Length: 151
Image (cartoon, rainbow, N blue to C red; front, side):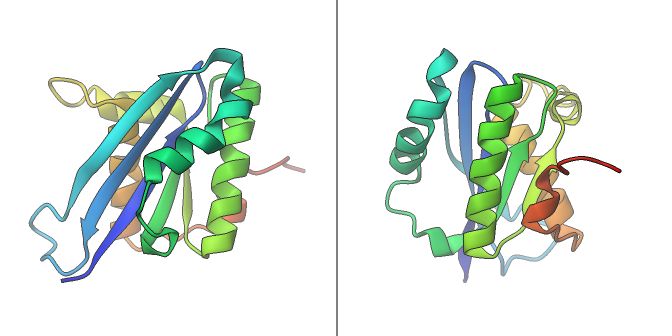
């Protein structure tokens, strides 16, 4: 049985939210083949840019980066600076690991969260949306996590 992981980063508010899902790639499609491995949040305020990497390193812990199958990043609406910092981290990791990066807007994340009782945490909802796309064979390039500008 092959196990890999997925990482979600939500940086659009003053709170950094991270979640990791464990994915069993050999399960049949009709059963739940991923579960939340761990999740955590930190109220960082304006310290996000200073503390993000330390929090991420501590959170990932001893999971090898090569075991990640995809990343999910919240793309806004939210704090301009926090969103951009998260996007840069996700795009850099996606490029270096050669894995898809799913950019999901906050309205979609909140709508998915509210479909469950109790509501899913934002990191869980972000992972669920990205997981569905990953399962459907949608593999965006890390460059598409957030278009810089449209012409």
